[in-house]
Length: 487
Image 1 (cartoon, rainbow, N blue to C red):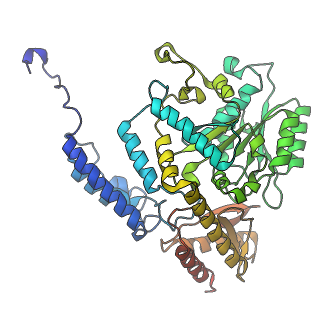
Image 2: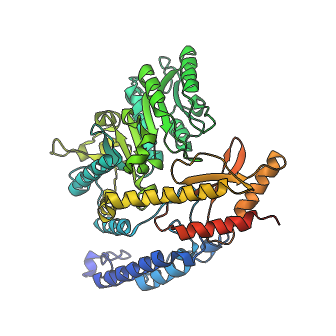
Image 3: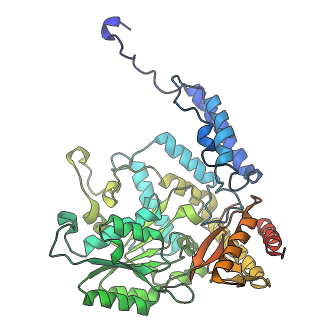
């Protein structure tokens, strides 16, 4: 370089990416690492035996001045990272809702990272945009929704629900998009309704949208943890009488704690009569709609204004991938579309994914969903969902027949809630169930999680990992038997 073109102290131009040969070698090794991990994940405890702060303490305090070889970085991955994650891909992971990064999905995620597309506009991502529209329509067909629904992909159900409730707020005709909520004497308090079993994402949505937590009505549920339509109607009527403005109902198909199903047909009737937006949260259980015999739980969903389901929960797509279906795609555009001069393009009649939510940047999530559906096929995905439901029913029957255990909720899908039979005070029962959970989880072969029903601690076993087999169920039962045995 001519010194005259490089003032003193200035850095030379960068040399670009690492050499392709080094990249190729690293990718081949990464493929071997990933395959070895998926094939041998059971060598790890589900939850790593690591203390808070230990991982950071093993890392250099400052970044490296000079680049390091990928081989050394991968060595450190194997030493520091892989052993110290909670292994959601482990067949003994039965906490929360089990998820699986399947091999086809991992391939899709890898290639999406290589393409590094930002599909904010059709122009900036023609194939990603059209594949997203198409694969969402495949999924719509798979779960039996009518063609009036159009889908697009977000990261999680929390964002899908936020987008749906923002559209509900705008569809109420209150001019919030233009005039906002603050300082408006013409605008009464808005109200949103869900059951007392609904996911906390509804709470986060109303606080983010300026509706306020005090205007979220958590409607009481029945003995099977389903929203009570009579209580819903009473809450709406009371709010109207008090001068509030109801705008939306959130019904849940597969509640977070118990996977119970809100009674959609009467809720649909109330939503129509009261002219309210109906959003259906089927983040977990929506995948079960691919099995025709399970669609009885979803009767009425076809009348909703929006529905969310997460392929990353029970369709074996790596996190994150949440599909939001809406009956009126134009309403989403009326809510969110905003096109600054620097994003104007000449194409007409195309979908610009940036118009369908709050985010501008959109990564290529559709590729991994497309690959998973093609690799397993509809029949293969159905067989796996049915298999998980069958394992859950086996576990439920064993618990129901055990002299020291109680099943505490319905099991419409693949999650079983249970606890020790009541003994002692409520707090003593809670401590006993917490201790039981700790005994089950401690060896590291399984990871179950707790929740509370009617204020009491219960244990959840959520079966949904692609690699969980009947042999794993047998071993879980052996572990439970030992854990509940009198000391």
